[in-house]
Each structure stands twice: as C-alpha cells, then as structure tokens.
Amino acid sequence: MKAMILDRIAPVDEYPLRMIEMPDPQPGPGEIRVRVRACGVCRTDLHVIEGDLPRDTLPIIPGHQVVGLVDALGAGVGRFAPGDRVGIAWLRGTCGECGFCRRGAENLCPRSRYTGYHEHGGYAEYAVVPAEYAYDIPDGFDDSQAAPLLCAGIIGYRALQRAEVPPHGRLALYGFGSSASVVIQIALHRGYEVYVVTRGESHRRLAREMGAHWTGEPGQAPPDAVDSAIIFAPAGEIVPEALRAVRKGGTVAAAGIYMTPVPELDYETHLFHEKNLRSVEANTREDGRGLLREAAAVPVRARVTEFPLEDANEALIRLKNDRIDGSAVLVMS
Image (cartoon, rainbow, N blue to C red; front, side, top):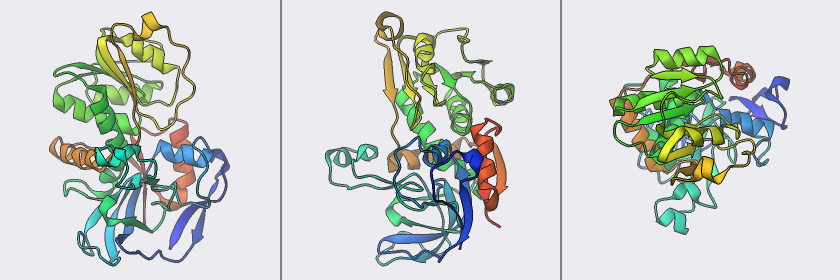
C-alpha cells in the first residue's frame, strides 16, 4: 500500500512525511482492516509530527480521522462485515480493568492507545483497528464530510459537554478551526448564542456566515458576559482572557491536547465567584457515538478542503499557518 510515513520529528515546513510503498497490514484477532477513503488532517497530527507531544512510536503513519470500508476481518470479529463503512478515531484501545475504565472514564485510562501515535493511522491506503473501537458512519455524510467528525467533532462534543452551557446560554469559542466549525453548528441547534474570538478575518467571516452572534479578535472582550467558553486555540495566554469573559459560576473548557504555558492567574480576577476551569483529555467511545448521533440530527456539515494523499505535508503547512477554513481532508485516489 501507499502511505505517508514520519521517520523523524521535524517542523512540517521541512516536509517530514514521505510517501512509501509498504505491505498491506493484516488484521489480528478482534481487528478489522479498513480500505481508507478519506482521512482528516488534525492539529494533533501537527503536535505529533513536530514533537509537541512526547515522542512515542517512530516510524509512524499519522492520521486519526479515518473513513473507509471494511475489507478484511480478524478472528472473532462479529460486529462488522466486509463492505461496511466505518470510522477510526484517536482512541483505539484501553485496558478495560482500571478504575477509570470501570467508571466510564476510559479516556483517562493509563494504558490507553492512540491511532497515528502508538499505532499506524490513516495517512495510507489501508488501516487496521480493533473492531470494538471503530464507529458506524451515518448514511447522511459522504466520506470527506464524515472524516472531521472523528476527532474535531468528537473532541468538540466532549468540550461542549465539559463547558456545561445552560439552556439558551451564551457560549464563547476561542479559535475557529475544524473543531469549532463543528461545535458552532451543534451549539446553535441546541439554542445557544455563540460568540467567536479568533485571529484571521477569514475565520471570523466564516463564523459569522455560520451564525455567530458576534466575532472579535484575541484581546477583544465579548459585548456581554458569557455562561461558558471553550478554548480551541493551543495558546495558554487565552485562558485568563476566557476566564474574565465568563460570568459568575461560568465554566471554561480547554479542548486541546497541547497548550503553551498558561500565564499567572489572579484569584479574584479570574477564578473567584465559583468560576470553573476544566481540561479535556481525549474521548470515550460513548462521546464518539453521541457526537455522530447528534451530528446526523442537526445535520452538521463540515467545511472541507480536500488534498490528495501525497500532499499531506502541504495540508499540514496550511493548517499550521491558519490557511484552512474549516477542515483539511486527505482523499485516496
């Protein structure tokens, strides 16, 4: 199969991914093999490639927003059949035995495994995943539309749950990339009033087109106090800004897997009045199933820019430099 593989940690501007031919992977017991049709390009891929996350498996095929067709089954798989359309997401394995797994918090499992980080991902013609960690893709989405839902959507959905927006509440989104462009659709469908703070006029324009009540630049306070905020941008300096923006008892959820250092917080200014600051770590499988159900009901329509597999480096460069409105997706020829 053809695959874009990472051999060394390096800035994406140096084109660290290279196209190779390698044997088609074979599914082991309990696994399925997927013929990849589309794979979303995620900011987490940037953090893996550029070394913002601790180095793990090298060489590695990145990519964890994978949509394709099942074409081979490992021993003992009864949940899927060849030809089924499925999705592969970031979370691909947990121990199932620890206290976190037993209480429904498998996203915190200390032995969790991740696609495109611990095991090869979807920047390739084929990918393998344990069947119990694959998702049924609703019929209403084509492959490119479905791909961003499998991380941008799932993480945004979990962040929205963590933000605890009250009914008909005001929600501020900091950063307006792939995840926020999914979340705004769910938030508006739920009846929330959405404010967006993001650098780049094209992102602010897209947010307004998608229904944002107000948009502004970093450093600009929303015109009204908000009930909740989600920080999608991996910039720690936004945390105090978001905490100032929420009203008494409000909640700020930081959605990223990586963030630059958070400045010193002043207790009275930023945290008093029972304000809450929460992080988001990965997702549970129930988050994934919940997101796909709600996305189909809205229905969510991702803003997608497609790239051929061999242009993965270029897609990552454009993502890093905020030159993608919505989501970048690699499509297989």
